[in-house]
Image (tube, rainbow over the protein chains, first blue to last red):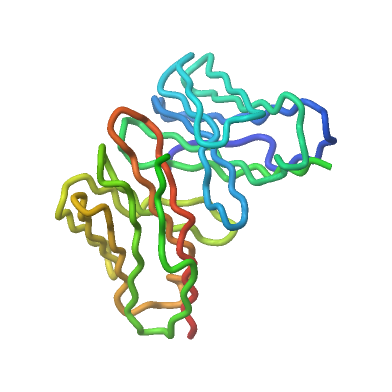
Length: 112
Length: 112
């Protein structure tokens, strides 16, 4: 299995505070993704990266930003968390375009 | 808007039954179709990656077919077992983008 870890695993925060989630992979995968999972919606793409410093928006990018300063790390930032951003966040990576995704264990984020 | 749809949303079958699910996707600019298995409290794991029209893949009792011209894929499970209980996700990748767009999944429960 690809070594892909997310931190933290759980976080509770207050509305209006900034939050950063980290995804770290040790497989030298080029592509990395952030999804959120909500009941009835499946996995929805927030942002993705196709290389160091190369990122683009997904379906539900409003209120989120990302950064990828090195291959192994992909950071997701909620600039000012809102209750609608309470969700489970999954990071995934792929070695090449079209290849299978490897997922992290998820981060449960609660915004109160 | 790239929309990937799955049906049914959920399914209960008896042990030993065979079953199948559908994934529908826009046929234009198709690049790849993935199937993932997602067990409760775990992360999604890839079952199949398919790219060519008419592709058929098999892994044990699970198989999948792909029709890119009409924009659908079927996942079949032969002789369902309780351990097959999971959510099955499909994801489509389109030419000119690195986005994997997921359907909302089919939740399968196999009753012993």
